[in-house]
Image (cartoon, rainbow, N blue to C red; front, side, top):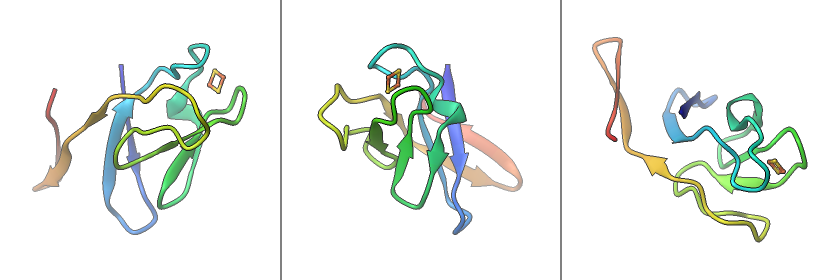
Length: 75
Ligand code: FES
């Protein structure tokens, strides 16, 4: 599963949707322009790289773009 986020600036990011901590739903996390925060235990990951900002394992980050109103995610 892949979670796709549209940021306030209109850009999009795609990360693995499963939190590596205990399997929480990252797609339901709170985001800003830099990070997503898992709703279960509030650990954070960088939306661009998938690197943890709180000492956890990284999540997979996928290249994503919008072209002609279509979303493309490279897997
Ligand atoms: S399950 Fe996501 S932070 Fe714990």
